[in-house]
Amino acid sequence: MANTFNPREPNWMGVPKPLLVGRTGRVFITSDTPSWFLRWIYRNAMIRQIRDQILGFVGIKPVRVTHFSGASHPEAVAVARWIETVKGYGVSAT
Image: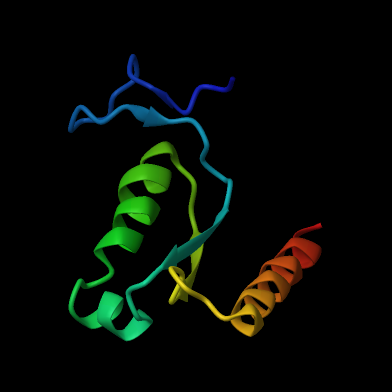
């Protein structure tokens, strides 16, 4: 398992040195919260936490996020569309 940060080399604020600098990320999120509600009411709190406080902390930047909503009881057509979207990202990453 690779180390993600080095607590023995903190910056001037005491934050450990990130060790995954230069890497990028792609996150897929499923939820029941509509995208507009997540953005305007929650101010993208879940996305900001994953992108900035978790992945950004260890140096992974930029992080692209794709949000699929209506995940509790999705229609088969929606699930097929989500799968095609994820496949597209997978093919373009290789």
